[in-house]
Length: 85
Image 1: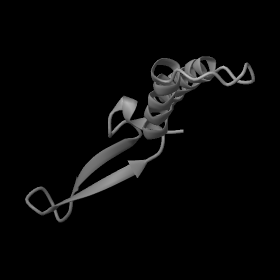
Image 2: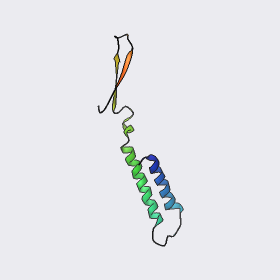
Image 3: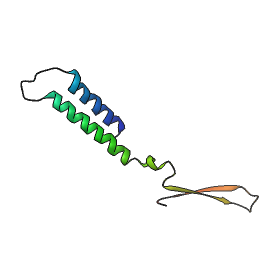
Image 4: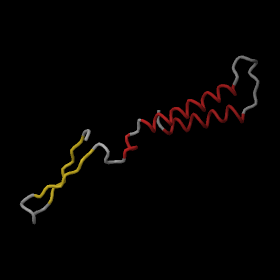
């Protein structure tokens, strides 16, 4: 679940919890379903942010080395090593 789905679930849950005043005959309580969707949306957003790799910044798992090609006055070459540092 990503951020978009989490925001959608929060919005849908808020509509069910606060904006709808319908009696379903005691079969389903729409206010409770709305609160459940809000909680699931918040947890989804929180987990998405925890497992999102950009928390460490864009260069968290990469290292960039600049090497000289052809001596100190020659052109440079960027090398990107991917993986854990």
